[in-house]
Every structure is written in C-alpha cells, then in structure tokens.
Length: 86
Image 1 (cartoon, rainbow, N blue to C red):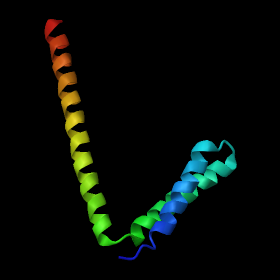
Image 2 (tube, rainbow, N blue to C red; image 1 turned 90 degrees about the horizontal axis):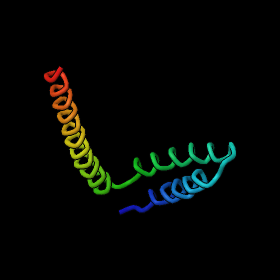
Image 3 (cartoon, one colour; image 1 turned 30 degrees about the vertical axis):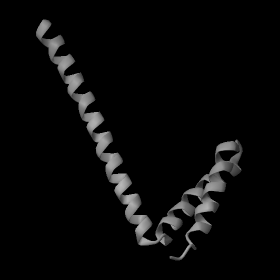
C-alpha cells in the first residue's frame, strides 16, 4: 500500500492547526491550503481507506438524519397541540 497520501494529509493537518491559531490573513491562506491538501490526500489514498471513510460518512449521515427527523416530529406534535388548544 502506497503511503504517499500521508504527505498532503500531514501538510493539511499542520496548516489546519495554523489556521485555528492564526488571526491574520495568512491564516485564511493556511485554511485554503489545508482544505486543498486534505482533498488531494483523499484522492491519493488507497481504495481501502476511501471505502472505510465512505462507510463512516454513510453511517454518520444516517444517524444525523434520524435525529433531525425525530426533532421535526416533536415540533410538529407541539405545533398540533398548540393549534388544537386554540
């Protein structure tokens, strides 16, 4: 497994740290570089790592959708109670 994807990954992590700690315009450039480096790292990553990340994203998205759906149902129930009591 080629580990060349680790170079832009660590570059992105370091520039992301600079972005969080910096307050000047250089911090914005570091943030842009961090995003670009992380995207390049994902493109260069082996398919096994990409597959694991895809599974994690799908599971996380499903859980967030379930939480939002539950909150929406609660709000609708509260709204129906308010409307029926009026």
